[in-house]
Length: 483
Image 1 (tube, rainbow, N blue to C red):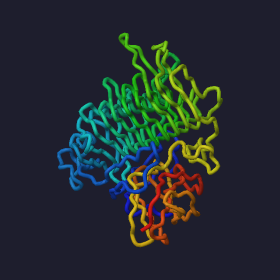
Image 2: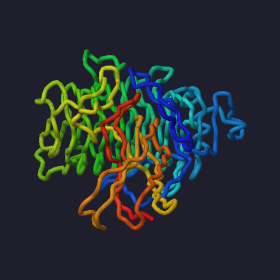
Image 3: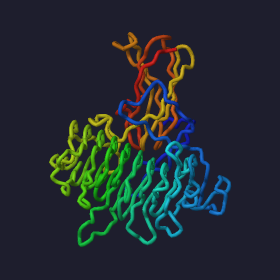
Image 4: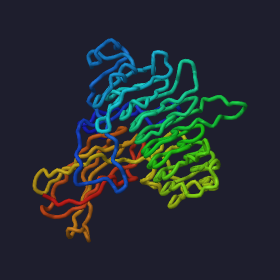
């Protein structure tokens, strides 16, 4: 397999996710800073989250919390590193296991960034980092990024707890492996309305599968991602699998969320939307968009709504479920609507995973669901003229837990509006392995100066380990005039 581009720092996950503890070994992150250019992301699709890779603060299991927090003199604990954060800081953890706090129970992250300059806590490039215990992002820690970490929610006392609780605005979870054996993995918005939450390229799995039954029954609170009292959340390119109850729960007041291009498999319910009556006031999850996901092998419902407490509904909640590939034991258990959402353009079809029982969620070349579920994205593409008839395409590709074999292809237009086009000419392909934000570059030569061309950046849709030679996804498209 061709090497990852040298401009990227990368750590490759060892195999397809198998079982409870498998996951990422770290992030693949670009040092280059791309600039928005002539090729743009497809309409309606936000660019990939960018995670900085130059560390300002360091922690190591062999460090000391009395140290300066530099690469040469790192802190020892996750909490000490978190307390050193501020706007523009990047705290990096070297390989090892960190308890969330000195007691191994909860740790409150109280320092964040600003809406224009985030703070970041991440695994050091190439590191394999586990954080144990419950991580609480307090309301004072807005604009914080957590990236490339294993967050396992295991406490020394065995207390039932979430792995991550988010109470702050504009918190980004990127490229993490998150599990919690006894409870919800990620809880967002408990106790206050939270805005701008983003979950991208994470694996959220086996949440609650170790919880004992209560009176012979589950407590039904063991979800992967729980959005309560949130506004404008983005949940994209995540693998959400094998959670005891719901993969994603929007209850009871989650509004304006975009849930797209996730692979959601083997949960009791894939996605649930709901409402609650409290103090005589109806709190409803409204205006949420659920699109282009793979929602498969749910034990009950692929998409379910629970608005019973606020019936009758005088107005529709405005939730739209569209363009998803749905598959499971029975087509009768696809939707449990109960007035909670409208659905259109969804397909009941086998997505043809390469090896779902072993955790290999690659799509086969013959899959009818290409473009759905986890797929490559592009961050800040740039087109640069290098010489007459020659154009270089620089970009940051987000493989999102995939090996993305990618290339650039161009074809000539007969006029400036491309009313007719010639044949595609493709650059050599290369493999990019990682979780998010890998620098890529390709040059196309032999162009006719002054002529208009169509261009596409194309990648294969394949989860780790990847050797797929097909299943193409266009991640960016546009036109340009050759120099």
